[in-house]
Image 1 (tube, rainbow, N blue to C red):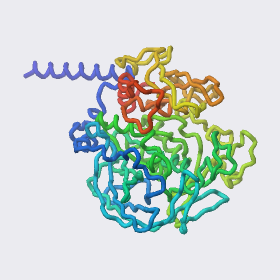
Image 2 (spheres, rainbow, N blue to C red):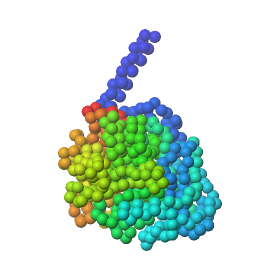
Image 3 (tube, one colour):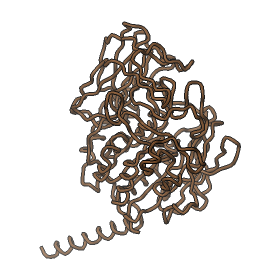
Image 4 (spheres, rainbow, N blue to C red):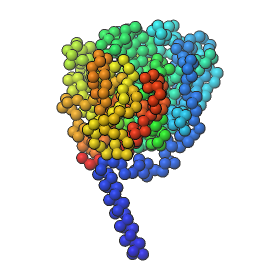
Length: 529
């Protein structure tokens, strides 16, 4: 008996020593599921993805609605058991339509699961936006403020979805199909799994910023198109969630920027929950219930509450991953909509005090900490790289992207076992049309590690660089940044939009998938500093 006890004690200390050595090396010895002691079968994401999937969530070529049917939702996210209202307008009064709700995930490679269907709804003509001619047609309920560019559809409710209590957290698409087969989406998140290992946040404020429905976005007004950050004086300064999205068939940026990351993460069975950045704004401290925060897609517009909340999480030991580029570029504020619903209007005057532009934001004389300007503007003096490690450098409209390259000086245990070699290029178009890099502005966190250094070219043919980086915060949390708006395309073969220059090349990159897996593990452990 005593011999067994001694052997057991020795075995315990051997295991503990190996585990400690793994942690000290900066890598995760345990998988995420082992860290919290859950079995994979109990992970709601794993359970959900065991259901039968379908590719029916995709809109077939030629069936995309332009103005035949358009829709929006009453909220960016909802809890199971709550209700979500859809507002739908058909171009012709009385046109019937159906609604199919899909959850995006892995589902054996199909990418989605049909959750419910609603048939034989009678459509009402409540107005529509003609994107080809940039005209708002017959929207008698629309509220338009030419001074600010604010456009609200203010349609009558069309269908109220009672979200079943057993729906798993995720990113959902409501697909509306009219009698002629024309189809459009409306995206929304379902929350829950509030203490998951990872929390993925959708950038709904950026969706709204780029939405031109009704004639205004934070970049455009009517036929005036701004090709650079904030150069169009006629653009809107207030944009509403109370209107349909005009791009990606109504899905906004979900399919172009986020779908590949969703497919891959759920294929790996990570313990995830999903929230909107509106939820993050309303309750920033909820990040402390998780081990890692994941910034999905094009995450450009942040409120002070969002920024403060993510910094608090990092300083409290929560790992951060910025999976796109151009994140945290503009500070914005929320206002209620005309009906008084909180946080349905995004406000961003894009004041540029560094360029000596006359400030128009009324907060300039009230509270400069909430001034809607670039975070790097001296008026705020909170450059993005102080949080992310890197920040937005430049963009191009001449091509979709560039290959991703491992830095010739990369020396990180995160690269071990990936097969990725220093100085080598991988993939096609993975460094997208916007990219980030390291800046010598005095705000770069100590110990910034550069994993990737990729060659880029901006609109004026000037050479630039994209960096992929990470650093360890004083709290022991790791902060990873991809530095590219299309970096996560390496994780999956799905493409919403084909890049013709990449024809014949394998979309996903196994070595980058392995790197992302190592990053995901490293995000949820405490690192020595």
